[in-house]
Length: 112
Image (tube, rainbow, N blue to C red; front, top):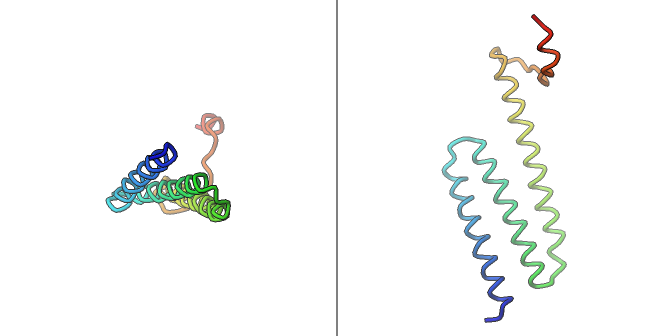
């Protein structure tokens, strides 16, 4: 076996193990946030495996797919973070109203 084959095998084995662990976390949960983080981790592992494949085979045709998967992971993470942040702000009031952004600490300290 050549050194490049050993490195490729090691990279794919580590990425496959990480993907398997992310799938376990995705299946077991227990909360929505755990599943979201597992999905984001899985998309990052897919991006990394595409980059490793492109680097080892010197194939540049994989790069557009890599960009699309990376953008999908980023947009999905930001969307879920905004959604969960909105849920937390709504639950902080207790009456179900949307309170918007929290006030800075300096403004709250001056109030009685």
